[in-house]
Image 1 (cartoon, rainbow, N blue to C red):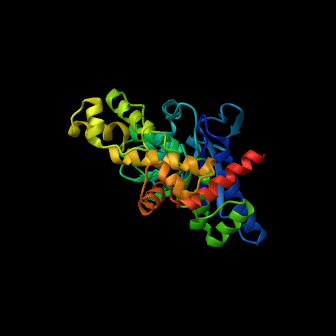
Image 2 (cartoon, rainbow, N blue to C red):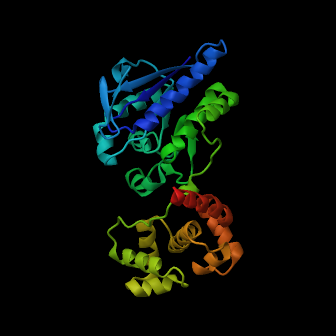
Image 3 (cartoon, rainbow, N blue to C red):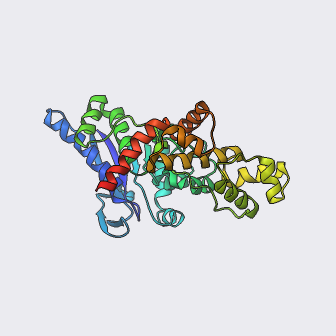
Length: 329
């Protein structure tokens, strides 16, 4: 039987904690229905007997304290919320405990923003990982040694697993169930819980907001100019002249401040504008392409798919229909 420890951090998001417990427990239920022994011993592990979750709205009771767990096979770190640096700090007692059990052979899985607590252990240094796309810049600033794959729904690297944003944690739990209990069991769980299986990317759900938390005012001015004039052809030399910074220094500072090259940033702004038009307006793909400053269909489609994981037509079908349904309701 595989021992699973779902930790209960302060400020845990209850959905990911309880959802994980339900899925693993359901596997045991299916096993018992088929006359087989349960596969998982699922325990909720806390720093104290009772822990507040989801902004204090709920109290979660631990079945074990961390001091009572001598050995475990898999540690699940649920999503957390609030000021993430502060949340990691107040849950600091979990950090050496997670590291100790990983070094003793346990695997570790973080769900969504739980990656911040996992990264605090140092175990993500040099390893592939994922978290919610909205927290990309903050994560990179706090944990630059981790290999963050912004687009991924799931990552796996040397016994450490991470999921992307929000409810993509369900895909990671299904992935682990398939690993431990087989594909048939994972598909059965997916059907019972109505989970879309085999999702690979969170790119279609990602919104490019630009990185403006830095203090480089010249680069901010350049970003704002790009965002206001993305339909026009913008050159790097034009931006350099506008902010009175030499090209070499400008490109270096832009990359440092935004984590994008200048050309990458321009393309991301254009594609974000195209996404919004495809979602909200009646224009066809060609009209949107011209409106955001592209003249070559092949280039536009390639760039759009690179950024979103979908073709412009597929994106329009997926999200335009969603918005129409939301408006009708």
